[in-house]
Length: 464
Image 1 (cartoon, rainbow, N blue to C red):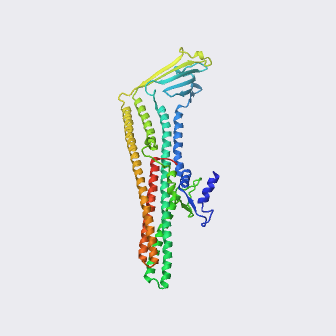
Image 2: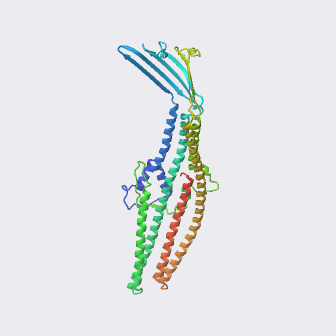
Image 3: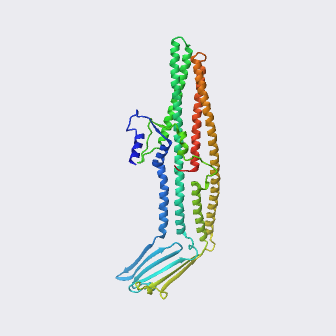
């Protein structure tokens, strides 16, 4: 890991090496590796899982055993009215059942008779049960199940978020590559225009060329210089945009050096890097897509919420039964001869609140069903569209390569005729302008092809 860090510093730190360092190539695979490892938003995406785990821990806390102590005392004018101590230990369970043990010790001259207990206190052990509402499902049960589903949903959402960052980073890299290749093209043709200009000037001095030829050669030279400057500033801008995705381990942003260049052979490795090699839209399982999995987990959570709201339509019937004993060391003393029991029943007459909550829960489910159906169809159509677009770009790239090759042959032939005196500088410049135009078009087409591959990667949500 330390060597890996030093490698990054070697590549990007402007304070370690001078501008005359040897040029280096940063491949798409290396670049996306840096983004996935160090980009702050990727790290932020990991917080989604941490948050879901914290919520799961919180939901599990509803089933934690609980110790309660209630102490109340009143003393006035040297008279102890009452001194009451009530300590309870409760153990919640999954279905609306709660076990509890209790110790009660009460004294005082004005103590309510119902609180009278033996001198050494009174012990009890019992259970409370919700028979209707809250038995098969209650709020704490639903919260725990929903927290587990949220944890799984968070993993799918995290995958989508990281995938989106990698997609945007890929597009930025392709724009950087396009700007770099355009700059190379204009730089190459500027060199040709400069050589041609110097040659024509020499021929003019020797009386072999007219003065107008030098003017036309200089016009072409300045046009190439202008084109190169535009391409250079575009390359600088895309380099800065690329730097937005490059960070070090300590959240330090990095500005890419001028000696770092993109890989011009990206076309040979893009499928392997983006994991889209041999993609078959027919065999692609859209149901396994993180977006649909996230919606499925959300749907299950809403189903739980609906069950909870349905359960709230039932009456509240709480039973409790406690065995009483003043000698807890003897288990046999806990029997049905001494007990404390009770029942609590409540039921709203109109159930308007409960029926309203249930209706809202059903509407949320219905809304999500529509979203799931729409997402499923949209994903399938996007995959089909991108697949056909890639096939079209494959054909367009082949045709464009042939056009560029043919224009190169035409330019070479026109240059030979020009040096033999059988052509004019105007025709040479026209042929060269056409070659430049189609070369730029070929680069632009390749850029669109790369972006379509990235779109397929993004739709698949296939993490590197």
